[in-house]
Length: 385
Image (cartoon, rainbow, N blue to C red):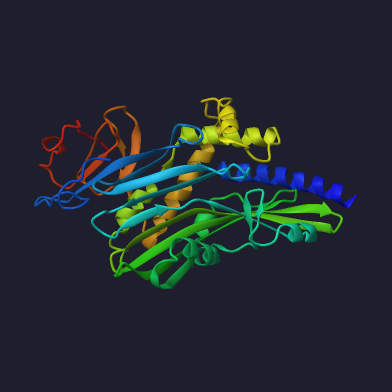
């Protein structure tokens, strides 16, 4: 009797976790001389950015993510499908760095965790094991997760590592819908935080800020032991900015620009949400192979629903707020018209002229006489505010 009840409970837990997880998550040019900003100008500052795109070659097969990075920087990224994790089957990692300096922006993969006070589940799945793709571990707040998980995983090889500041980010967390669902009793929460660390890397003194948001669902489950609670919690929007010590704050506007324009592609997100929704409807607890994933993707369509578009907008809004949290300064933006397709795009303000080309690259200039067409054949056009 107990074994039968446990099997039913596990199935219910997985379906609830997948469903709640779906709701929660459906929310380069050639280098120029003089570094990423190009040659110095006696008439005004000239800042160049180029668009880097990354394709989901493993799963959906389309462009999944783009970043706007300083020209002359390098970038890399990947989309990995985690076939045993139905609630969060994708992990993306992207970074951009200055090959001639220490500056780097890094967006790390999301991580899924699980915890339960059900004695039988706790005995069967001890801390450190995997529960339907999620690592079993007691819930942590964002600052504790950054210090105990992110630093150990991503900065374990540096020397003299120390945390010099930490801060909660309530404004970022307020972007999420939280509280108790009156029907299911599931309690959803979100908390954001950041820490600044200093360390030595290859003999250079570095400083770096890490950010993350902890999202969780506390799910009540009636069992033979009485009412127990299972917690699915996720470490999301994990990103960092680093530079040589003393230069992180002075490069804040550049890092904010990179973070702000780090965008999930709306068409890819639309397909991804359909894949997860399909798994919920068909009660698929995990994808067995990339071949099965390909079959599911083939059944999706290109039409973007209002819910998926709102999820994309919400995702971008959260990234915007994280960008503003760097050095606690806002990135002032201005709307410009793209002369090639007539679309409107928000770009950093404060420059006399903004140029773009068909590749989605930009040149920001305070020089009245500067024309990027004199040094390039990419057909640069002025953008109008």
